[in-house]
Length: 130
Figure 1 (cartoon, rainbow, N blue to C red):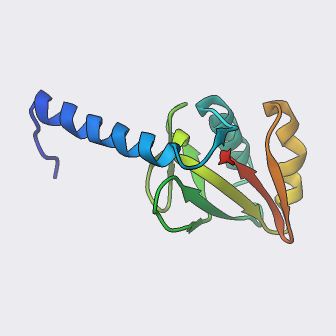
Figure 2 (cartoon, one colour):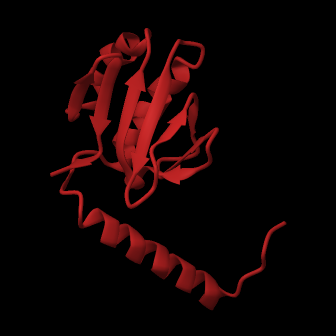
């Protein structure tokens, strides 16, 4: 069921959401990714939907790490997952793990320079870091 909101209520929701984002963003340091790079990354992951992959993602703020197995781009700003939609700019880091992680890694060069950390079972793409 969708809740009808006045334009003032919607503006206040957006203002608070932006304030929470800016507050969380201020604590994490430099930004390495933008919406376009995340969008391109999630398009690559969509091509490997049947691959043996799993994901762990941390979004900005006090949110817990979320484990997932599938992502799909909604547009350049938003991505959806089995755990629910999120804005790309909110991704602090994303781990790509599993036997097929190397296949994804090979395709990442076309996105451009990425801040990547190795993991025993794959790798981690940093959205932000100090």
